[in-house]
Image (cartoon, rainbow, N blue to C red):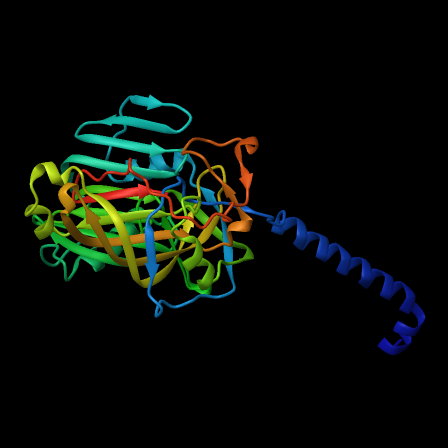
Length: 366
């Protein structure tokens, strides 16, 4: 019996089976995808305000951006990574809902369960047995770091090195995790615009290591973003969450009397360059959300109208404020503490007299 005859004889059964198969496949896709997001928690906190101006040449982005999901690397696997470096974890010093620390022979290891990162600081650098042709310097440190990653950190996501600098004889390397198909650079709020950073001596010994402890990054869905016009309208508001990292120019700072240095505060910010990153939220909300990172100049003023300038980086969530949860602090947050949407109806810029800067480098979590 040929196919045509077979189809004519059993066409009703074939159509019914096909429809059922399609329905089951759609149900499977929906279940595997998870619940559709109505809103997300912002990775940034606080309510501070400055007079912020964005240059007209700063580029705009897409009308929507992807949200990613991720899994935390288990504590047992994290311990295995540390052990692989030849470090024996001693007794537990601290162990609570958010932080766990271990005693080691020459330094400390901290596991921040909430922000989901490992921080390893060594009093004495350790030999990590990575082959090297010469001393580790700024021009060859990227290759050395990637060899180190391949040997010890293969459980972490794929990465791209973003920064290499040399200071006091040691080399510092920073990198972001990457989702190549989406051209997404993934970072941690705590680490700044990176997901992993390491410090090596010129002999290739490891002095410190910090990394975001996530894996299995996958696309979840896309959400509408804030427009360029809305960014200019909202970014100065106290209710708009953002993180500001600043550094006062050393020449300006050194020329000021000590009494004036302690009174310096930001008066206004001008932003000129922009980049896009995706930031991991925390271990309770495992989402990775898009953010805009804008660089520019910060202007400071102290007592007696003394002034100074510095570089500044302002980072904020790219998702439209109507779709973000408002977060009040850095602790684990119950659903009852979340307030969907930000009230941005008040466009007045409020001064923040308590926001004083006591050093040339600082961070305001906003």
